[in-house]
Amino acid sequence: MKQRILTFFLLLFSLFAYAQKKPAYVIYTPKGKQVSYAKMVRQLQSKDIVLFGEYHNNAIAHWLQLELCHDLHNQRSLVLGAEMLEADNQEALNRYLSGEIDAKGLDTLARLWKNYKTDYAPLVNFAKTNNLLFAATNIPRRYASKVAYDGFAVLDSLSEQEKSWIAPLPMAYDAELPGYKNMLTMMGSMHGSENYPKAQACKDATMAHFILKYYKPGSLFLHFNGAYHSDNYEGILWYLQQQKPNLQYATISTVSQADLSKLLDEHKGRADFIICVDEDMTPTY
Image (cartoon, rainbow, N blue to C red; front, side, top):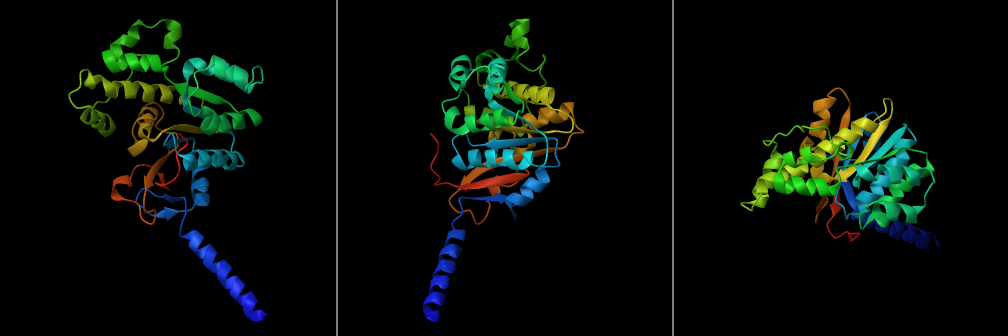
């Protein structure tokens, strides 16, 4: 009998050990050292603004975003915001958060991403349940599209109301930032390609503008955006630091690998915390 019990526990231990070798994700520091989720939370809770860079279709990233909301809210007053909601939809979003309209009403009045219901509604509903501000930080896509073809000058012709939905003009722009230079390389010699980094920059500048507009001293602003908008401490973070260099910032990035046991060199240095997800993880779309 004792032998059977011992065998049973040895089997459980073996299964547990095997499971531990197959994690869905591992968190790394910029230098590639593994770090626990709990330690990441402890370090983030002392910051003013955290940029969570995601893969838009990555289920693990979306799950961890919601977990961070819960765990940071236990320690700090939170403000939430996201790239996935555009500034001219803030009024509709506020009406939903206040209970004036329901989810169907928000879907009617706001331009929601195709994966909103599965990936972002949980974050918005967390804000609603806990009476938190949720900021729609992105530039309306139609304006970014115009910049992609005609450059920043096209924004000068916007009405005063339309200009209230973007970062103040003229927008700062550093064409030498590696992220923007890399976009030029990727676009090659396509017609108008020199303006594509400017379209990215107008998004970054606008998100930074609204993050600072809705940031509340003493609170932690947790912002959700595509990883490229904050990777390598550029993009949104560059604009934030130009305007408020004394605030305490932290960045998170999402990457994927076949082997999670060691962070690839190409992913090192992307952010303060790098969430490395198994590349076989099923995407949300």
